[in-house]
Length: 256
Image (cartoon, rainbow, N blue to C red; front, side, top):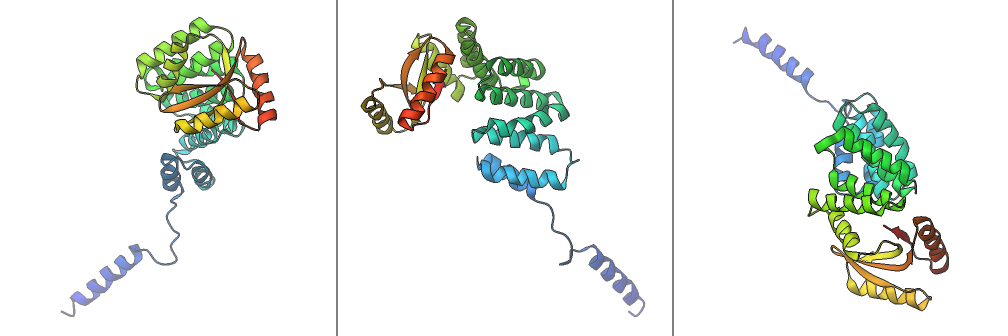
C-alpha cells in the first residue's frame, strides 16, 4: 500500500494541473452569441458580438464569414452605408467562391438600397457568375430585375422576375415578383407601408387620401402594401417619394 501512495499523489497532481481553476480565462463565446442573435434576427445584438469576436480573433478562419454577417445585419437594419465597408472586406478576403458570391450579392443589395442600380447590377451579375447554383438565386435575380427596370429595361427586368418565380416559387421574393408581373403596369409607384393587418393598410390608405394623395392596397404574399402614384421613371418616383415624406411624415419607398 505504501508503494502505491506516491503514484496516487502523482496522478492527483496531474489531474489538478489539467483542470480549470478560477484563474483560467473564460472561453471566448462571442462568435456563438453572435450566431445565435443573427439567426434570431436580433441584428443590434449580433453586430457588436461579431465585432468582439473579430477584435479578439482577427486571423480566425471564420473572420471573413463574420464580416459578411455584420454587413447583412446592417442591411437588415436599413444601413447600407454601414454595411458596405464590411462587405468590401468580405469580398476581398473570401476564402472560397461561395462566400465571395454571397458577399457580392449583399454588396449588390447595398448599392440597390443606396440608389445605384448600375453598380448593384454589376455586383449581382458577378455573384451569379461566381456562385453558380450555390448563390441565392431568388435574392440575386429579384434585385437584378429591379435594377434593370430602374434603368428603363422593363423587358429584361420582368424576365428576371419570371426566373425568380421558377427558381424559388415559395420564396418571399417570388411573391414580390408575382405581384410585379401580374400588375401589367410598367410604371413606378411610391409605397407608404406594408401591413400584415388589412385594417392597418386601410387606415394608412385613408390617411393618404386625407392628405390629398390617391392610394391603393396591393396584396403581396402575406402583406397588404399601400401605394400611391404612377411615374414613368424611377428618378421621378424617387423625387415624389422624398416630397411625400416631407409632407406626410410617412416613410416612403419606390416600387419596384
